[in-house]
Length: 166
Image (spheres, rainbow, N blue to C red):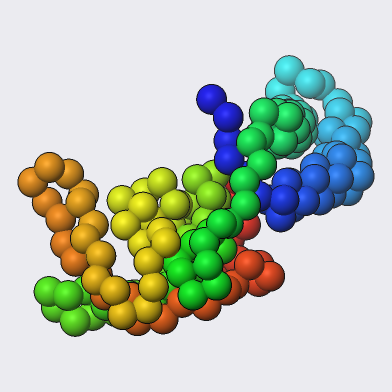
């Protein structure tokens, strides 16, 4: 399986890798050295905790490098006035007239709690390529679905999210 990533996703991952290698790795190695200096390693909880954090950092670096290596580069091919990748879409739920705002992102960046909806999710698939004023149907499963009305679309590809996670 390949991860679909944008150029910005890859750039952000490379920045995180660099930060983890240059800054975080150095700090964690220092913590391991300090804990080791405290004496008997068989009863040294601080040493094992420091080693665990160091290993988590190295694992994260390998994970990000693997993601980049196996990535399939994608771009948004929707029109300027259509819902697409890295665009924020305000929608109204047709049944109760409440509104919500979603940013359409790649699968690896999806985080529904932060309003980041994957283009592969039911909502993302339904919105993709549609314009302001259009009514779209979101089919959750064979028995359940609902309608959304697109209220606005704005390009937010240059803004960083509060929760940047891969």
